[in-house]
Every structure is written in C-alpha cells, then in structure tokens.
Amino acid sequence: MPLRDASELIYPAVQETLAELGLLGDSSAATKLAQQYAKVIDSQSGHCRGCDSDECRRSQGAPWAMRWLGPLLLDSLEALGATPRAKAAQMKGVKVPEVKPGGLAALRAAK
Image 1 (cartoon, rainbow, N blue to C red):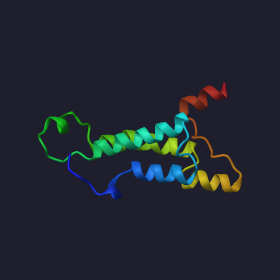
Image 2 (image 1 turned 30 degrees about the horizontal axis):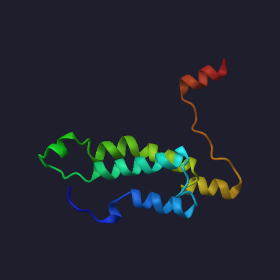
Image 3 (image 1 turned 90 degrees about the vertical axis):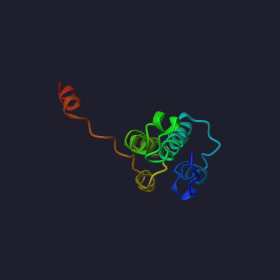
Image 4 (image 1 turned 90 degrees about the horizontal axis):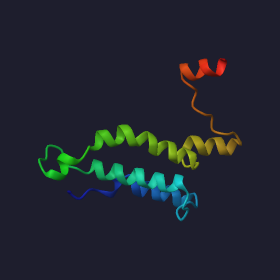
C-alpha cells in the first residue's frame, strides 16, 4: 500500500476529537466503534486505483467504505457528542433529536 499524507486519514482526526472530549482512554463500545470505523475507512481508502494486486482486488475500496461506513462513523461520533450538531445541542441543553421514523414506523405508531 502506498504511503499517504496523514491529512487524508480519518483515524487520526477521530483520535484527536476523542482526546479533546476526554474520551480517548474510554473503553465504551461507542468509542471503540468510532475508532474501528475510522480504521477500516482508512484501510479501504488507501488502495491504489487501477492496481491489479491481490490486496486491491480483495478490497472493497474507498467508495464502499465512505458510502457504508461513513454514516455509521458519523452516528457513533454523534452519540459521543463529538459532532458540531451534538455539541450545539449540548450547549443549548437540548437532546439531539432522533431521526424521524419512516412511513411504516409512523403507521405503526399511529395504531
């Protein structure tokens, strides 16, 4: 795998954010999950494009990692209060609103 500039990596940014929040040594599932998501995203996005190596063929690649794991990473950071939205809600003393239920969930709730 080719070397990359650290500014392209997500894991160091997640670590920095967790350190600022005092959560770096925290062993909670949400903290570990955020760290793992960041590691996997970084490992997938480092593969070269157009390469025919076995490692690159087995890799899902950056688009897959960002599409499927990016939102999960964001959700875990939100739960930790590590996103601008979560921080703003904490400053106002308001709980971060839950995601609105879809149509089926709304119909079930109406019964």
